[in-house]
Length: 93
Image: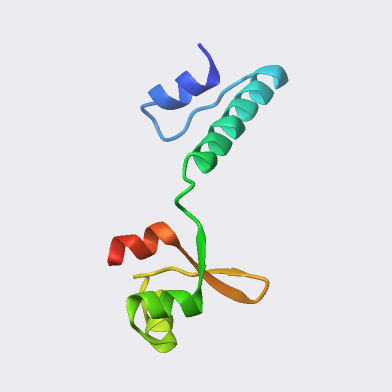
């Protein structure tokens, strides 16, 4: 049984596993590929600047700030600039 099956089929919250380094490495590489595939499969998830979001949603920057504090629309900060995911914006329209 491979590591992924053990994790998927585990009924307890704690288990002690003895695995080889090769099997562990293989599992991590597979998970890494899955994550990369999921990222590539969401091209609609582009980042939109704060100013553009405010214009599209017809709200001001203060409203976007309050929404982020409430968890309604979560921003992504990159290099001191604020962006929002296009999918998140589409969901609240």
